[in-house]
Amino acid sequence: MTELTRIPAPDGVAPASAYAHVVMGTGRFVAVSGQVALDEDGKLVGENDPAAQARQVFENLRRCLAAAGAGFDDVVKLTFFVTDMAYMPAVRAARDEHISPDRLPASTAVQVAALVRPELLMEIEAYAILPE
Image (cartoon, helix red, strand yellow):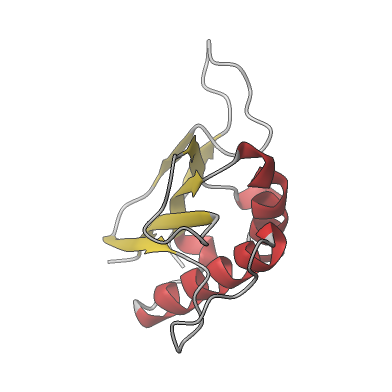
């Protein structure tokens, strides 16, 4: 795990309650493509169920990070793409199962018109920094 510095509220910026505004570190950069709620066989997990989809997405993120030798403690940025902002509580609940509230990464949430398949409710990408 690399040493990361988190700045939840830079001077003159409103405090963040569910993310850090700035996360800094040095080391190797890891980018994880947007993950969706497909299992290892490519089957949808959680049709019309944002909580089930969010749990599967974070499990996929965990596996991708592990493949790079990283974990959620190394994540510096998450981007959430959701087809409805009403899914964000389920996304945050799944995130909180993997990331401690005192180690929250920088984050962006975007509502999109559609994802690559119509049954997908969300896609989440991650950036991490590993020690050199």
